[in-house]
Structures are given as C-alpha cells and as structure tokens.
Image (cartoon, rainbow, N blue to C red; front, side):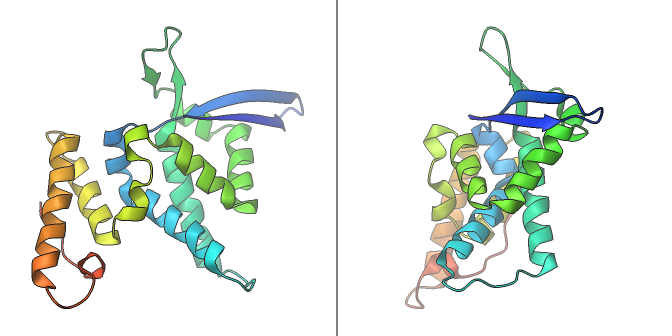
Length: 184
C-alpha cells in the first residue's frame, strides 16, 4: 500500500495535511496492466538515458494520463476494522486539491512513479511488470475486463500466449519481443 502524506493549501487558502491510501489487488493490476506497463517502461527508459533531453509534450501527456488512470484506480480508504479497502470517494479525490498536488509531484519527479508502482502492487506481483511484454499487458487487460475470469485464468492465458510466441518464433530470437494479437 502506498500511503502518501500530502500537504497543501486548499481552495480557500487553508493549510491542509492529509494522508491518502492507494492499493491494487491482483484483479486491479490485470485491469490496469497497459497503463502500469507504460508507466514502468517510461520511467525505466528515462533512467537509461545518459543525456538530458527535452521531452515531447505528447510523451509527457501520455505519462500523465497513465499515472492519473492508475492513481484513481488505486485510490481508496481502509475500513476501520482493516478488512476492506473501500474505493468510494474516487470522484471526490479527483476533484480535490490533494489530487492536483500529487499529480504535480509525479510530473516533477517521475522516479516517484516507480516508488508508487512498487508500493501499490500486491506482494505476489512485485517485479511482474518487468517480466511481460506490451502484448501480454494488453491481453491481460482485455481478459480482466471480463468479470467471469479469475486471476488464475488470466495468468494461464499469459502463459499460453508465451508458449504460442515461443512456437511461432522458434529459432528467431527472443519470443517475448514478437507481436501477437490477444485472444478473447
């Protein structure tokens, strides 16, 4: 869970300090796989660059939109008894000054996105984003949108896709980098 202390002045200039919680469960990870993958790839790409470069507006907008999507999808409140992570209040949070402040922080410090991703991921999925391809991320997101699919079925489909890729690309290099259309 990512707990973020956010200090700011609200719209009436009153100083506020709030703590907000963000968490994804396995099903949430699969539903948001494309955005999670893109955020991770973008930040990792920036880390690899040795020369500073001016970032195109479209690239920054895509990063912002992906972070916004995942931030809102992972927002919630821990129940008093600690048994539930209640996702009510997403729209109120989106309209808040706290949301604006945290999004500005992500833009000014993209490394914070790495910390955010690491902490919102379920324990059994840490490091998962580094092991999949863009195609697998898209397939997982498509499958997860079907409420009848369990996380195990989604993981099995990813394994099936990897096997299919390996067969198609036998002797042609790394099968994880070859494109394949997701099956529904």
